Length: 112
Length: 122
Image 1 (cartoon, each protein chain N blue to C red):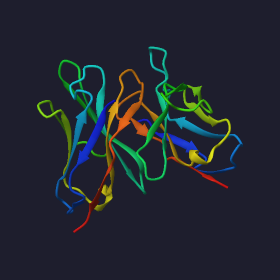
Image 2: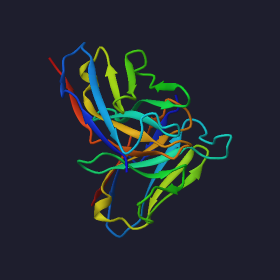
Image 3: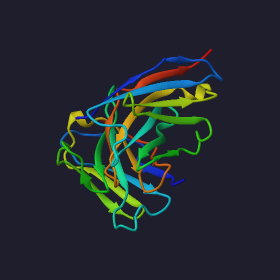
């Protein structure tokens, strides 16, 4: 199975400031079709998870443009250009290259 | 807009079978493009992808390594729903369980059920 790691595991943030989360896969997530199969999800307190980014950098429908995904191969980053109070929660990366799909351990983002 | 409505017991005894159902509206369980997954969230494991079912002229299944052999996903086309059965549960299976819709071609898990807290305890 592909193992996913994230850092940091806890991220206190200041509203209006940028933030970033790193994700690393135990093997390349590049498919032979040229796409990289890495998603980012946010689970806000008391809610079901929601998709933020798919295929490494594509924002899901309705996701604010302050969220951006980047990276390639095994190393990826989710950036929030200016954190808002509503962005608190648990952020997960997930590889969708090969089943079984696997999530990272999660990064808890909260307000300082 | 697809909606996923989960149902099932919130308490299961150790060694018994956990059974949950996900009723799908606004889409077809036998959608030839997308798929359906079960994911759980526990304090110890975070988000945990359990398995998926998808229809491509026939039903296909994938399961997470740590539940393979005791987990079954059952699509029901007549009721347009998806069921999960997890056998021989232990307290480690205590979690919030979600059914979800997965888009094809790596486009992510786009819809989630409301979640069902299942506690494994005698």
